[in-house]
Length: 144
Length: 415
Image (cartoon, rainbow over all chains, first blue to last red; front, side, top):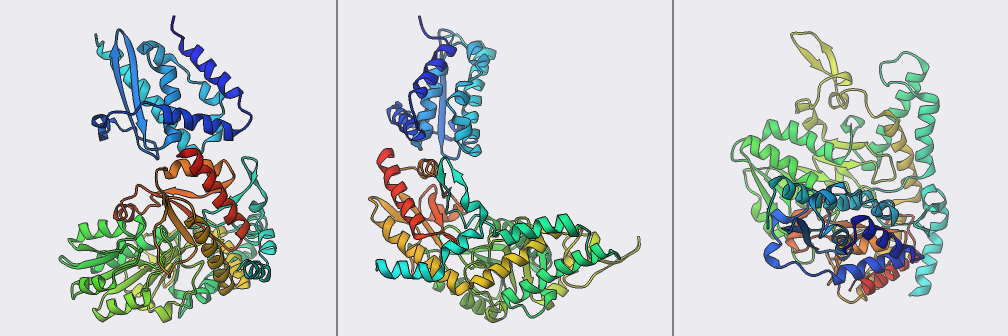
């Protein structure tokens, strides 16, 4: 059975607890960023850009069997790593699950306090956009 | 080379200067702060911080109209800064020194008064391709309102203005030329004296954006013969929210007022209001008293160290940084010319500026990344933004070395 959102969040928090320093945390995030599957170029258009990020972020979502699946990319690799974590937590869940997720793992891994305000705003903008997609799929009652 | 560097630093006594800036003692992310974002805002010496505390602790009163002792003391300190600024930029008289909130407000003041009054349909305003948004947008707004045209002096690959193109843009319809003295994004020092002279030959008025030059270059507005010169206190060791607009007296006298109320008024009836004399004509409302007062110790501090000494020290840092950073694989400096001050702007192939900024911050090193509010210039060089290290009188060679090492590590992790 697939993990719940809370379980995945707990896994990420545990992953981060293994690192002693922020150097190691950033290396891990960068590594995740490098491994994130690239978004096909046709999706890298203005309407898929997430507002509120200093770097460029493109985010798209699909709906299958009642669940939302995300794909995203950024031109900055640390942002890509952060996106990769957000996708790992939220992708493959129902709109209701996504909308009720508190995403507290971002605080627990120290990301909000460590990133400058402008960048954590970017991170929050991505979460908001992901939830907006979930809300859209829920309200439109898409059927795959 | 190494010995000469150490001697020069020694003579300058940067260690003594650093002691005057309390913020330089703090740590960021467990590392001693290395502050290389000076072009955005400079740090403040203790004397400036003390002046702010002293005003609110002992002299807090409104200026100019009070009959009591506190008001008189505050007014004296408030006006003392005007005299210090007059000397600092060698203005002909203290009436030519207008207090503003910063460079941006100074430029807007000229746009909304002089330009709004004088630009006619078909007139032309010339700016340069390396302007900060603050010296682009106000002119766009006024040109649109007055049906005037905005023209742009192009920038070459080295980050210099193309002076031949500038000469070709000038004509009898040119009414205003507004250019920066020093580029915030590249550090390029523009040949403003020549720019001003060529504009004057065509009868145009010239505004110089001195936001990035006032700290580093000797400013002599009479020698430059500029008509307006705008700058900010916070980039020259002083408080934020305080700036100066210098204007030639005749021009300022002929200009309409900017905002109404407070000290700008001589007499008010419901039928007619008469306006105060310069400089108060342009200073509506209760001014930024504390910050104006605290600008004087900032100017005193710069004068005490000496701009010539500051420049030599900053050149040393810039040259050392240029040499160290050029050795980094794939690093390209934006703005490669001999006439630059204090700013090193660069991109690194295969690496996003934001990622570099985050990793440097993780080592306590503060740089600026992004477009530096000069998007047209970024487009000119086909980059989304740069990494910018900008140096000040309190920075050290050791800090530059930390930057270079931080960059090498960041690139290794990011690529």
